[in-house]
Image (cartoon, rainbow, N blue to C red; front, side, top):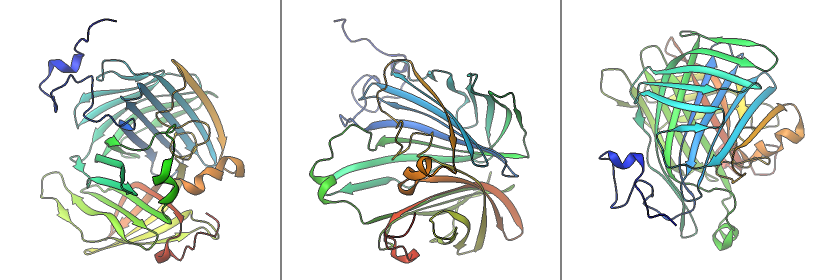
Length: 363
């Protein structure tokens, strides 16, 4: 066995603990570090969701891309053994290159089933989201830091059937989220905390919105009774001070008999923002978020694993897991005469008394 050697990041003064950057500060198997990006046009024709993550205590790295047009989704997923160079964000055909930190990134996928070459450019400064911690019983099972940012984008997306989609500034919006910490990864035995402390309900909203002159971020997490454990409504401009917008109250209109939103009104101290859903991408289909059945983030699939799928989002069997997952909806927003674009990310399962959900109705 060779002696331990430094990794490339050890060259830089970025250490947080008295260990090589090869190691994370926690021994928790569920340690993670990942990103998610959204690219969507302003007419609701297409929504591309892509992300890349590392799971250092599992020795796994993976990435995915999904393209949703109407009720059809294409997905490319890749997984591999985690290497030593964390600056190399490259898994199979999927790649993230940081051209200028917090300003410009290039995202590519070189696969015959689905390919793209896109440049993401920040429209506003990145903002840290509230620190996120969740306990189950006495165990801290999720703890994460995040930042979110809205931007512009340009480039091209191609599908295996020969379609080419031009991504143009001014006609498309892009958002992104970077997070790191600890969150559940498949493969862990549930144990007592999971068995005896199951939540009665979960209600989640994550809403980044890009207007021409400002960025608005709304985030809320509530339990079955409406108790809010995560709460933020913030306005960011390019040069002015950040402005807190008070506690957001979100009224959602759902498709009849479901928990699928079609529109919403976000009530803030300074007025209301109206949202209209354009195109939707359930993260439990294709993108690897729980409770996906065919693949989840951090799951070991062997070296050099690559998977391509086409999903019909009208198929009940395909959509079954989404009842207990989160869906990202590309949406058009209106606020005091301004029109903006962003993501209305929402998941509500189990009981949520403020919404009138008992936990028994269709989701």
